Length: 179
Image (tube, one colour):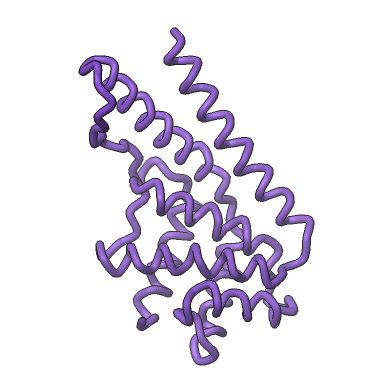
């Protein structure tokens, strides 16, 4: 019973942090800091995409990067003043985004900014809780502190249609970028 309580607490904490980050970002204007964070998340997603040939939503790092990207682009509109945000995006992405592709990237990010990606928080919380429980059970059974590799159990089919749409938009964008 204690393990179940631990899992529920982990899931609730992750979800609360995700909602909190999204709420605070939504009430502020897009800044250099938002651009830096979005650029780092975009670079992380792109790097994994290039390595695997797809965006794998069973990977907790990808889910975290997608949550970070979504929370840092909230409020991005076609008519937004993006100069400060764009400077951060270019820097945060280690120049994956540059002046020649920035219009295409901003267009893609604008379409993602209008999607409801809230299901990512519960997906990530479930994945993290599953990993933590499996690791803890493994350690208890073996009586050691060794770690074990677990199946993460989250698939693209479990994600909402908006998440699927965001992944599709990013996949299309990534296929046009070169780094």
